[in-house]
Image (cartoon, rainbow, N blue to C red; front, side, top):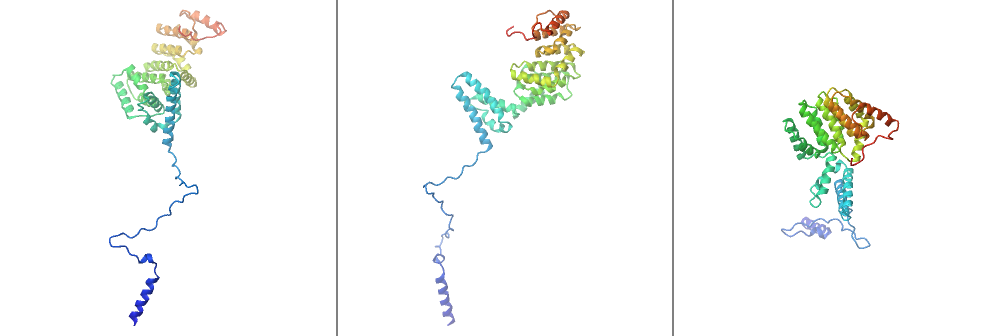
Length: 342
């Protein structure tokens, strides 16, 4: 009796269960997967909305800006050589405005096979922003080693160092602080002069500091390097150099070397430097140098006076003094550089 009652209760319990739970999978089949998320709803317009775009990275934005700069050059090419030249000049300035953060992105544009000139402009901008490649480090090390072993090539190494930019300024300045032979240090100053002419005005503080160096050849070569920096004919460069010289009171330092340095080589270099800088305030000191005991100093002082004033007087101190007194009073009206082509 009890057994019949239990079976009846079991049948009633099974009948109460949902039908889906009673259906067992066939042998060898996986059980059914649980229900997934609901399907995306189609808006009333009938089109499924696309997911929002992922924001661009800073590198991608910089690459787009560089591409735009390159495209502006390609467009300018269609308008002629002059337009293209102007566009390339602007491109260098625009690349520099991107800043150091753009250097890793710029590297991808240095090997531009379709426009190698643009690739060179990118590389130049990277150098000015402080980029240093492994090849640059190796080349700089070779230049310094040649100098230490007295195999220095002033013209060849001078050109090579210009391509190394700010990195070369730092490495040469660091090398100058070591205990080296006088001729080795003179060669290093020559490199600073080449960098200065190439537009690297970071050399100016080091060169002015070397005007007090105990080695007279270093003092004289530093004067040459300052004058050599001025020989870059770009007016922006000259204006920046003149400002740097004024801020550091460089001209009075050069004048003191012209008057007081014991070494003829330094006095002669000072006279030449002042003549290239063409500063009006140097005229009286150069007239005094026409009485220098050394003929080479007198010769360079006279050449400097002619370059600054455009006067054609002989190297006679008395005649120059009379002329200068009249010039200061307004006759001739002003001291000026000689006309172009003369």
